[in-house]
Image (tube, rainbow, N blue to C red; front, side):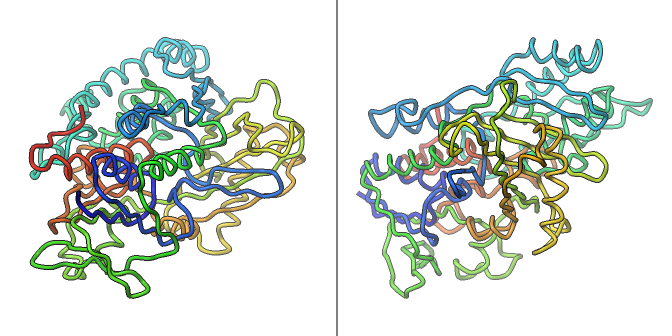
Length: 479
């Protein structure tokens, strides 16, 4: 039985801890804040409750596998999962609206034809065929296997883009895919919105980002009853049942090294904890900036993804009942100086004081130039203006709002930036850090490590790290 220290109590770190505990190891999690969940947080006030991180779950099979492998109760006995249908409503800059069904290729084609004109759905469907080819080429090495020692093959573009122009100029970015292959600026905006929701700029994201809409439209979107925080509660409880120990309000200040191997940690109080393995769920760039002796210089840092975007979230407490034909998720596309926003309106009694009120969350992806401190209020103003296209009578119904800025993200997670999922192409710039660190005995789990950010990807990282520790060099990936 090995002694294992886990730094951080985010979803990926807790998924690792539960799997390692089931394998017979003694696992202790050290979390610098007062609670678990990392980015999967909650804000509650006056009977209203809001998810402050992700609002929907994609690829729930990742967490089904976690619960099957770590106990008798399956995921659906621990949380209530519901498919969101329609998966999303889109309100484009010209006012056109379209409702996209959940995980139905034929339904999506028909909806796009009806809203955008004959042929729009067919072009989108043909694009998804090419996106599937990119998915098939990268799914296993990007999601189910440890990152290879030589990631050069993943640096090549897997998307089979259509050639354009007499000179057959290559398509290298997602924005170029939209402009050259979709034939309608609204379809291009639809594609851009998928990249933006994960923090990527379509102008620089590789064409391989086409796998993001393919993944969502193929495998569906799911809501967890009580909000996504309920999933964090369930994973934490599964860890406790497997006798994982949690130590909160305890920051880790140094990873101890001896004879070229990680051998424990030093906490903020000065105490030291010996360990056979250290698993870090902390943001990898922050880890490099001080926790590991010898990695102080940026030139020494192992490769990691850093896309540089964050989130502003506005929690809206509304008077009045949610209308009968309201949809769970609406994407209001950028127009008139307002950003693209995602508006979540879950029909969940657990999130509101009574049936005569509604809790709504509005989220936008932002870069570092968007604002600082009080300037975020101006960003929030524009976000609420945009959200009015998704919520009838929003201004008149508003009781109060609560704005969560990237500074709140940094306080909760340790980093201003929200990491994105791993993407092939882009010369490897969007590959996160490998799970096996350059220092033997130190492992990376969670959104900052392979296979990247997002609830599903963080859960996959837990499976990979646990497999590498338990099975060692023989581990070839999830099955």
